Amino acid sequence: KAPEAAEEKAPEAAEEKAPEAAEEKATEEPKGSATQPKSTKPPKPSECAGCGKTLLKKLWYYRNDAFYCTKKCYKRKAEEERKKAEEERNKAEEEKKKAEEEHPQNTD
Image (tube, rainbow, N blue to C red; front, top):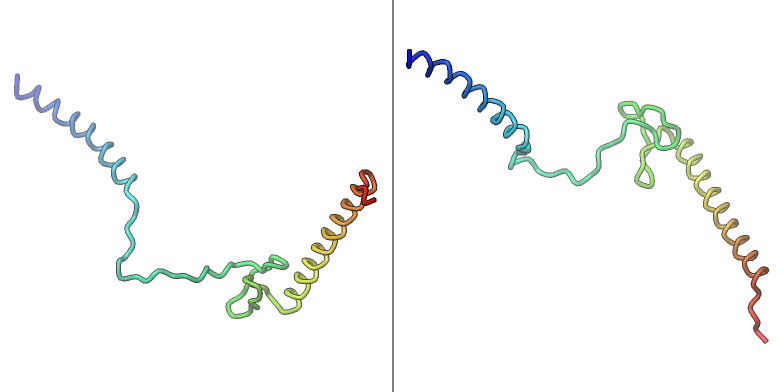
């Protein structure tokens, strides 16, 4: 009867060790190839930075660290950014003027 009891305990011990081994494998980070050079340039995105259209195989336009579907889309996005910056600049100037009107500095 003693050998039968040992046989019953052996499979249980194997089952306990199996999950631990699986956890160890999951925590290990995948190792990269030592011969593979590191890429320094960023990957090309799949969408246009201006309108969000999908960039096709060779039909894309790269300017100012972004990919666009056409030159027209790039110009439109640049114009929008220019207008937005101008509005922010004007808003900051108006706030500055209001602050000066509320609290004038004596220069006399």
